[in-house]
Image (tube, rainbow, N blue to C red):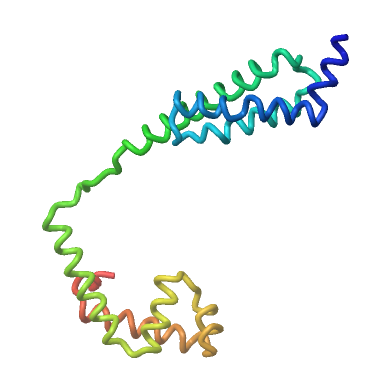
Length: 174
C-alpha cells in the first residue's frame, strides 16, 4: 500500500494537483513572513522542483511539510546572504590618503605641465615615447608598429625624453 502512495506523488497529475493546492498559499505565507524582496514565489517553485526530484523519497502526506521546510530553509539562506551583502556594503572604502594637500596640489600641477610638454612634442616623437613608456613596448616592437627602423624609434624616444627633461625640472636627474 505504501509503495502505491509513493508512486502517486510521482504521478504528474497528482503532483500538479498538489502544486495547485499548496503553491499559492505557501507563497503567501513566505511573502507575509519575509516580504517580496527575497522572492518567496521563486523559492516555493524551487522547493516544488526539489519535491519532484525526490518524489520517490517523500511520502504524499509529508509533501506539504517537505515543501514548507525546503522553502523556509531557502528563505533563511537568502536572509543570511542578504545580511552578508549588507555587511560588505557598509564597509566604507578608504577616503583619505597619507598625501598632504600640498603634495596633491603639486601632483596636479605637474600633471598639467607634463601634458602640456607632451603636446609640444612632434607627433612621431610623442607616439614613440608613449608607446615605450606607457604601453611598455620595446624599441623593436615600436619600430614594427610604426613601420620604421629600430634606430629611428630609439632616436624619437630619446629626443622626446630630452625635450621633456628640458621643460620639466622633475625629470632633470633622470
